[in-house]
Amino acid sequence: MAKNLTSKWRESASLIILAKNECLKDVGCDYRVLLFKRTKESTSFANSAVFPGGVHENSDASPLWMDYIKTSSQSSDLNSLQCNAPRPNIYTKFIEDQIQRDISLRITAIRETFEETGILLCRQNDLNKGEINGFCHSFVDFDRHYWQNLVHNDPTQFLTLCKKFDVVPDLTALFDWTAWLTPVTFPKRFAAVFYLAALDHTPDVLLESNEAACFSWDTPMESIRQHLSNQINLHPPQFYELSRLLNFNRIHELIEFARVRSQKGVTLMFPIIQKCSDGTVSLMPGDDAYTESKELKTEDLTIEQYRLKATNLHRIEWFHTGKIAIQSDFPIGDGHLPPINVTTENESKL
Image (cartoon, rainbow, N blue to C red; front, side, top):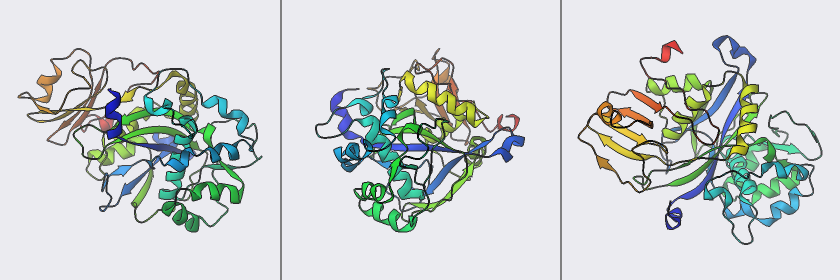
């Protein structure tokens, strides 16, 4: 992508939060995923079910964060965040007087998650030092509602919160997962980094009423089924990533996969929208029909006819009938597994 286009996307960071739940083993899965529904007044993704997250603020990249983190037990672990494999510019861009993005984007994801859900993924300083099990720590022993409002109104107060209670954002327990760009056909566009984070329990959620209407802890399959039955509305990143999680039934296996895979880089997911006579296709990198310079175009073909024109497929097909299908028939270059395709025809078999 040309560098002069990047200014059209606001940088943001989100968390795919998993919570271990042994009681779910009977349904073939031992974890749930947090989604919350944005209010109808939301300026972006209104009435949609999303992962927690939001816009990267300058305060998230303040050198004051490094001054604070260096005094913590986590400072010696920060080298694990570095990745030498290819990643999009959002991870690697350098801005004078700002800390490295591997740290600041994680701070954004943790701060925004706290603002929206009241879940604070921080560890108490000097506690759990050296503990490596892949699970995040959450801190709850404080007036969450008061500080949630304070940080929501002033992002700089997040560092104040951490200093007051001697806690540090649990940076090393957030694993690089993926990155998405909003298609050019949308008026509001985001360059969104997604991290995967896991908890060994289901935390209490305290929703910020201006941003969130309700929330759910469901298995990936349950959330997909709710979308297919029109109970919730998932946008392509959420639908795609939940479908990718279907490769894993056990949270420990998923954590280990995420930990190893995070050193293999990130492929930028930048959908190109293509209209067909019976629906819409979101083309993804690697698809034969994919080009980043392509604008919205109406095809006088059905989705199936358009699919037959390509050999290598990487696309989401949205039919006017409500049917959705993910077509992906080749390995993704960053070590990721492809999503498992779930449609209204086959979802009861999975």
